[in-house]
Image 1 (cartoon, rainbow, N blue to C red):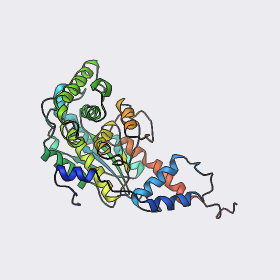
Image 2: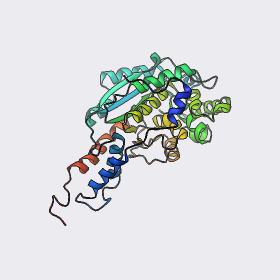
Image 3: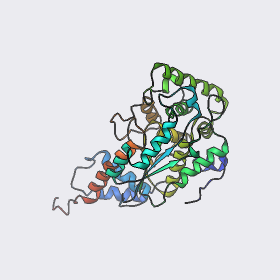
Image 4: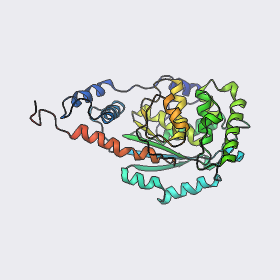
Length: 337
């Protein structure tokens, strides 16, 4: 466990406004090797960019993917009392048990991608406050869960895959997105895990009421995260901050995971450059959110599961990129030119 470089909201804000930079030397060295490999320049497209990105944040001229960590953060939400989800909140605990028993999709994907899977249950799954009535978290709870996320990241990790589990959490994701980038509940809300029209109407209403209630505080991205977010969303933010500090590239999962870290982009335009959005969720707000963050997701498979399924699914893609970079012959080795 490492000590987070922040103790309160002010020191957290200062850290987010001065993010650690990548390694330009590693970028140059990787580019120099790419120029010698037996292929036309740029012919492997985004695979080449991903290799450079890995090396830049690992601060290595030869990136590696020996220790890949998948973390799922689980939490519950007070706003679920507004009937915004098709599932009851106790399903969160049942799914956490399923993760531990090896029975979920992420267990299979993690095994296939050769990642270490950990599950962090936050605040004993006690729900946040209902953000249509008051702030989802007070400062103490927000910082505590954020630090929990920070400490969940091993500094020795080569690549971090993040995900979440929390019934109703597409509602705070949509509220966060609207507060940070404009719009209302109708523009950002999707059907989540299968909402019908009535539940959708309740979801949109809850988001709009929350935006109105907290309007005076929504110019501060950290207050947006505290007031409209959730325990697992705060922990995801903490993990992304830890990855930046430790020099670890990050794969983000879907809409909820991306919304959780969007405040870091608003606090500094380079706050998420060590992250890549692994896939484009079927949740409609995710495409808009990725555009605001100036990112193009790596995959588009229509996933809407969460639980780090998309971020872990992208790991073999990065392994392929790295295999090409390290395993291909140079023109000189192949006797060409």
